[in-house]
Image 1 (cartoon, rainbow, N blue to C red):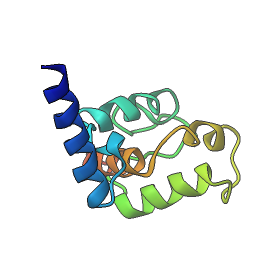
Image 2 (image 1 turned 45 degrees about the vertical axis):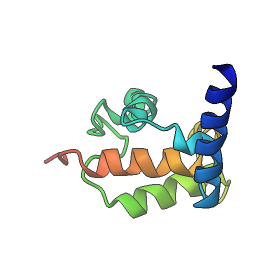
Image 3 (image 1 turned 180 degrees about the vertical axis):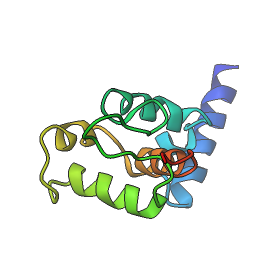
Length: 108
């Protein structure tokens, strides 16, 4: 039984790798974006509608959000804390959270 599970897991990993996704990306579930977005809530609001001086993320273009997040992660955009936070995320997680915030209702 263990061998069957191992073979199945290996097959899933190989399938993910063959289409260009790392094995961890194959395991991302539908809640991944919400889990990552929860880390943004302190500064940008729970649904991306910020209060005060922070930028709202809700309703923004997903490609632009992902681009900015990667720029923070890769040290190409100056930041106070975002460069430290962004370093912990994969491209797949960044794409998921960018899509999450893009789908939220923008602040008026």
